[in-house]
Image (cartoon, rainbow, N blue to C red; front, side, top):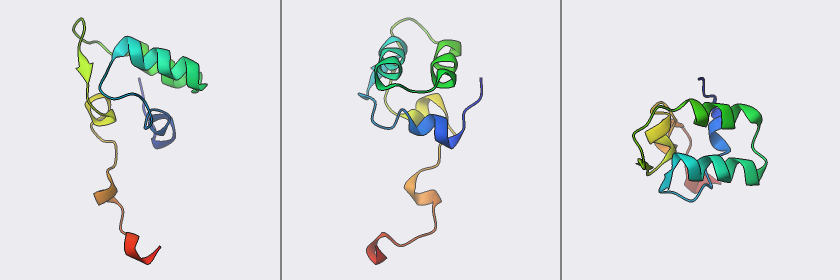
Length: 74
């Protein structure tokens, strides 16, 4: 399983919090690349585990704080 910023960004608008099955369903319905669905299928989780954000799946997902720009300028 590997995540890239591009792949993980396909789940930004997912209905959080969500279970693994709900995320797979969302990825299928939204037309996410096959790699996203494969990555979600490879997640080893406990039954009915609920994920609150993409960071629960990919802890290295960059947050807005990781970018060095001033939003007030745009």
